[in-house]
Structure formats: structure tokens, C-alpha cells
Image 1 (spheres, rainbow, N blue to C red):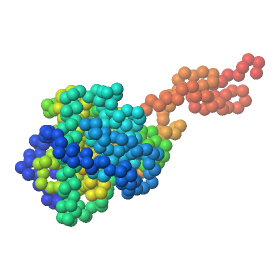
Image 2: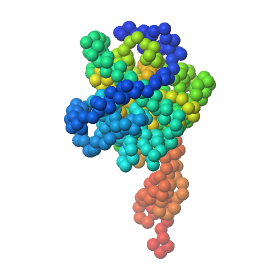
Image 3: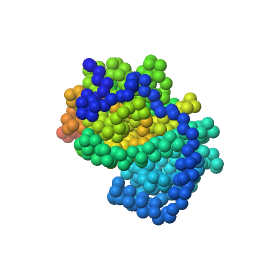
Length: 480
């Protein structure tokens, strides 16, 4: 199989160029920013406005983004300097929105996921950016995802990240007028908002992926990405069966499958071993992730075709939104490196966080992502584009191969369903054990499905009865 590292279609259509950038040397953003006190001082005069102004704007945003949502509560949400910078908006049924008092706009939102602060009703809530949610516990700053106490050095790192995000936000706001005046034909040729086909795979993936230990979020994002193509991308067999977590379903409609089939911890472990063979750590860059994927294909999926690309945005000429929306619209899953710090990383440095993007809104103003954090269960969240530093895009292009990772159980047969509508069947070949006068246990010789202490079904004329399944004979009682 010939490896294609840049999507040819996008190269042709959008003339992507990397400015003196060997994409195998891409690293996460680690620039240090001094605290912008001038900006903070300026904001302190802006935010002293009637709360009614903000509430009106919040209602406008909610109606535009989620017209059917009813606001349940609006709470104060503080930045890393413990200044009031945001409002946390929660809704009656599900979902949340974080509103930026300075920008008069959302910073992130979800129609379905619960707020990461939902278990901390009475604590002071601190927000740095997507993925970095904290609270004060009796005067101690703690990270919600890991539960760890945040050290003084990590708090300094969070301040740096916060300022980095604020700077990027201001740059994005300054570029908006230029972008609107010089909108490219390429981005106008795509819909304003778009989700990958079967996007509910990501939204419903709550359990079947590994925990984020030691900052291994990049590996988790690769797990999730390969799982999508294996299950809903027509690439059955892309992941070896011993790594698959199958799901029992109760409907023939894939959109009604409430939990997505995925992969187990062993898959995560072996992906990390691939990384170690390349001298990579648990925390990896997007380009390292691309290399790990290349090695994975050589080992496990050499007959499958794919296209991929990775880059750091500071080293690129082309606009971020134009590029990412193009990849998504062409069917790529895009792993995003976002500004942040992962408190499971053993080294004390700003590591960023990897999330899996499967859609965009408002021409790339926001990206719909799966966070890959079981503790947070944020599977359907829209984050702002200015929080993104780097990316790894991947699309598999092999001809359709059916998957068998969703199944429906009936007494004598298991039906395996590919989301394309193709069914396959497994009929049990029972072996009977533990025969008693009233019941038997049966075990399938092939799949080990077991039904214990099933009552005999006796048939036969007169007083001589035999179980129609296991053949057990019931002798007549003495005196009968």
C-alpha cells in the first residue's frame, strides 16, 4: 500500500502549503506568554455592565444554537486569577454553555453532555479553557478530570495557558472582519455547519475506550478514530477482533444504538508500545501520532488504504478554519491538539490535550469534539477554533468491508449487524450439561453462550416423557 501523507484532493482544491515546515518535526505550542495585565485592566471596565445585557445575549446565543433548550440556571464562573470572566449556563434536560463576558459569545457548549461542574454545585468554579475545569476545595485548587490538587507550578502553567487562549481569542476577533471581507471561494463552497456521517458514533461513545493515564490522550484519540472507521466507515477488520468491545443492541436502527462499540485497554496498551518503540512518551504531538498510526498500519492493517496529514498551525500559511473544515467535509476524522494541561502527565510542562473532532459549526468558528475523558464524559462538545494549536487528519479509503460489532440476541441465534444494513447470523450449537429431573444447562460449543438451569421441555406419549432439547428421559414414578 502506498502511503499518502497529505490528502490529494485538498492539495488540488485548496493549494495547501506548509511554510518551510517538515511535518515530521511538528510539536505542540509551548510559547510562553507573559500575563497581559493591560488587557485585564481594560476588561475590568468592560465587564461592569448590567447582567441583563449578558442575559439577553445568552438567550440570543442559546436560541440561535439550540432553539429548543430551556435555561435552568446561570452561575458565575471564574478565571485562573479568580476574576469573574464567564457564566455557566445549564439547561433543563441536558447540556451546558460557557459564556464569555468579555467576548459576549460562547467559549464552549454541548446540547447533550452534562456540565463538567455538575458535581460541584456549591464550590467556586474555575475555568481556564476547554478540558481544564477546576474548583476550589476549602481554599485548595483542584482539577476536576483527574481529581488532583494543582501545584503552584501547575497553576503558573494554567495562567500561561489562559493568557495564550485570551491572546488567540483577540487575534481571532481581529481577523473576523478581514475574513468576512475576503471570504475564500473554497470555504463558501462548503456548508456553514457539518458533521461526519453517523456522527452519533462519537456522541454515544461513553465507555468503550481506555482511561487517560499519564497524558495518553493522543493514543485515546487514535483509538476513537480507528473505532469510527472500523464500525461506521466501512473498514471492518481494521482493528483486530481481540481488541474490540462489541455492543448488544435492541433496535435495527443504528441511530438508536445508545452505546457505541469500541476498543479495550489492551488496544490502548499496544498502541502505547508502538509509541515506545519509536521513543515517544505517553504525551505525544500530532506528528508523532501520525507516525504511530503509520506503524500501526504496517503491523495490523497493511491491506487498508488511507490518507493523513498533520501540522502545527503557527507554521502554516493557509487559514485554520479553511483547512480543518475542508478535511472534515471530505470525510476525515481530525484529532485536534488544544491549549491546555493534562494533570496526569508526569513531567511538569504544558502538554496540551488531544480531542477528536467530527464536525464544525458556523464555517469553523467552532468544532464538535469528543474529549476522550471518561471522568468528564464530554462526547459532544463544541469548542472555539482559537483554542486549537495543531491537528492530525485521517481518512480510510478502502472498499467497504462489513463489521460485526453490534449484535442482537434471540434464544437460538445471534444476529450481527453492520451499520450498512448487512446482517450475519450465528446459530447456537448447544451442548447440554448438569441434567436434573427438572432442568439442564446448555453451552454453545462455538461462542460459549450459556443458559443455566433451563427447564426441560418434556414430550412423549403416555407416562414416558423425554426432553425435546437435551434428551433427558423422565421415568414414571413408582405406582403410576
